[in-house]
Figure 1 (cartoon, rainbow, N blue to C red):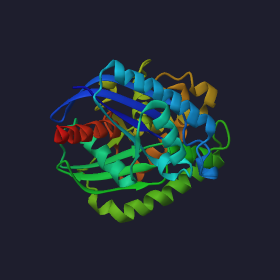
Figure 2: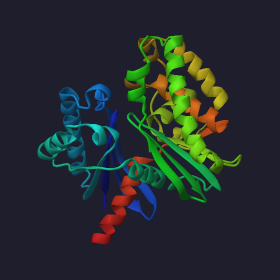
Figure 3: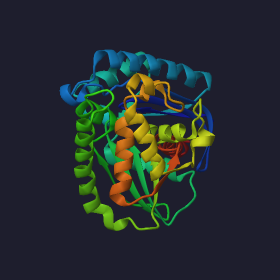
Figure 4: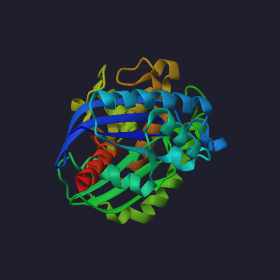
Length: 311
């Protein structure tokens, strides 16, 4: 029977409808809409009315799609924006009354755990892996050995926050770049001091979520998003340097015309690629393996476990 999961993220709302058999997901419908729910949250600590309205409208469409596919159960999760906003309970109530969707706000550690569950369900097994999920409002990291989590956590830093706090000019100025790179360096050096000893020469860096999949799409130069082409794609640090140089040289309006880059991500891709590069430099990775599976798939797998226990 079809099941559904929804990720109410800081930047995008995503829907997955699928059939779960064991640890395998057969995708029936995938949707993603940018609503920038976390826009302005850094300064106001509030979700903006217009962003809430747009998100509720999208969730109504998701609800209709679930009905069309006869999805029997749903797991809808709220992440960073929902954790931090003072008015998240108001938003949750309005979503429930307007769409029938009940959002469960999860902690950063729960988000990391579900992300790992989704990623590890459909990637080659490795002796050691370091998974990163760069989101709009937070970044989750998970260290695994033989597909088992040994350490995980969350950093309250994401691309929406980085954009609003550090990128002032268009294209970004040298001052902007120094500001964001300096800030990221401090954050990641603290993480390295904590878990760097667990990262070896054999550790595989795996990236999931919008920033990483978009970078794969840009590197591939594809016109339309393709799960089959992006999933399990490898990007070298050298290629990211080249892509970064090109992106930084363009204005936001010019970036919107770049193959593989969704226009809605034209501003966010700058902090996204800089964050990705800084992670790789800090921990000594020369390439990153792209996973198009992550939090959404992990939530669907968890829902399947819960449903079959009920049944």
